Image 1 (cartoon, helix red, strand yellow):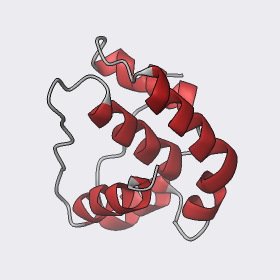
Image 2 (image 1 turned 180 degrees about the vertical axis):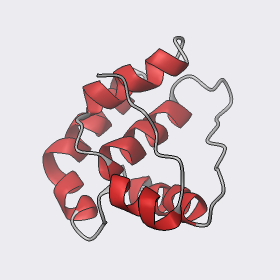
Image 3 (image 1 turned 90 degrees about the vertical axis):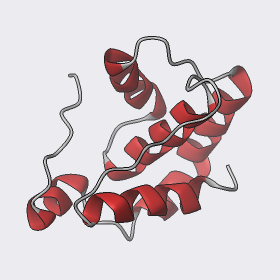
Image 4 (image 1 turned 60 degrees about the horizontal axis):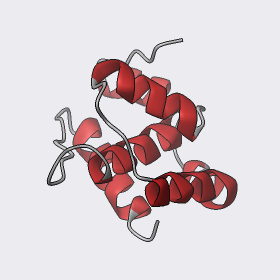
Amino acid sequence: LQHFKECIQFIHECRLGGGGCLVHCLAGVSRSTTVLVAYLMTVTELGWQSCLAATRAVRSYVSPNSGFQQQLQEYERTLLQEVRSPWVHFGRVCKQARLPCMQLPA
């Protein structure tokens, strides 16, 4: 939870610069997924479960451990609005930066 803001900002800066960002951990299952889900929560209006489902639609084996799931729930409950509020909605950011927007499953 303490690193979410820094990670989210780094990923977003990469995207705004027209690039991508590889988010990975040792197994690519739990830690990296948690960071990605937190990012998606911040730049969309979706909650943690919807963002996790969208991530699983692309990589079916991802599975944040229960401790990381609790952190995502806490982030959604306590910090998300604060972190999200200064950001421009991702769709507008994509258009301004001419980036392809992510298509999240309905």
